[in-house]
Image 1 (cartoon, rainbow, N blue to C red):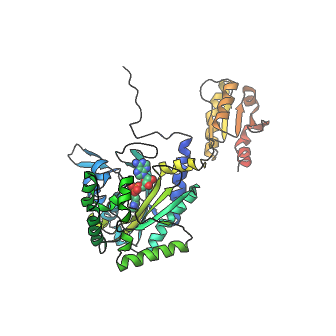
Image 2 (tube, protein in one colour; image 1 turned 180 degrees about the vertical axis):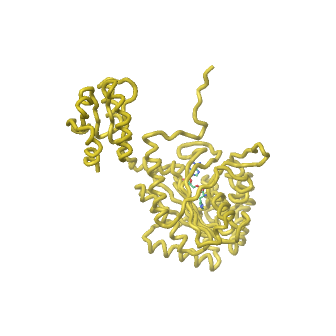
Image 3 (cartoon, rainbow, N blue to C red; image 1 turned 135 degrees about the vertical axis):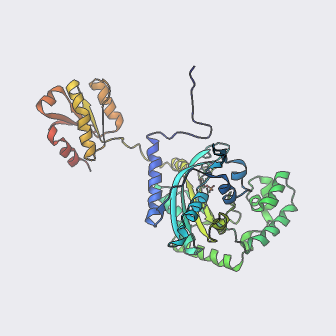
Length: 420
Ligand code: HAM
């Protein structure tokens, strides 16, 4: 009996040549972060379930509905990470990174898992580039982090997006505002589920996209009008610094992020051509997270950018790079003796830094030249029986069609001279 498997619902395979774009995005974005002194950290793909319950927050959709949680053979409850921040902070605490130079500057890249209803741009397995700056609440750091996101998109050629900015207050001013907001919301005509949300996480109600809810909360009190002096000064300083960097933003006093840990500066990068899943990245400051996870009571700020959505944004902007060639040189052996020479020759070229592939299997001249063309190579090195006897190869420029004999002993040097 045969079974046909396919990738699980909400997941997909990234194949060549598209995977080259995926790698290029990862490389360009992380280079932006390395240039600002952020160091790479890799944490496990699964963590204690309690880390996310406490870190991401018990009232979030991510924790209540979307986690891939399982019990391992040792009876531990583990969860595939739905995001990277909680794990990075756990690692910073565990390895005492706060004892060193502050801020602790970290970045990571990798897959995350959320049991969401799949649609374009929303997957159950998706990849984020994540950056975190830990240990200080300097507003200059907020400006650096927000600007790095903008520059990370610029580095891959994305321009048609806006940076939405808000502040969510802190433990000094948020509790009083929360009560005020709850009082307001309780007076509205809302369904039971939304009423429950008022008690659990009233700020999320502000963010409700349904028209009948949005209309009712239009006059709701906003955090930005209820900030304490420290939060106001912090927010003013962040905006001043961003303006000084030439970064433009849109104030969105209703911006509430889907994770519970945010305080003060919060932001989202929203693409203009992506429809429902337009948030290509987002983040913010989180003052209580480290303490909640058992670490020192210090602050941090960071963001995550979705690589999958960045790919969609690139396509929407018509910026998908042209297919890149797999190799530069393709070796075409004709006959048994030549075939024995082909792999050693290709290996020699590879070791000299020239990307090279060769014909495998018994293909004739026509089939072999087709394979060479398909590889995107600029040159074919054709090895005929007589060529080998004469100690030469035919070097064919696949663009112009020009061909000439080159002594086998000079081939590597000749090719290296011709290539940029
Ligand atoms: P988030 O807003 O949940 O934040 O996710 C950040 C980005 O990851 C989103 O803007 C989106 O591009 C991408 N993303 C999220 N869920 C999916 C999905 N199901 N399919 C495809 N892409 C998705 C966080 O994860 C925070 N940890 C960010 C952060 C870091 N805040 C502070 N530091």
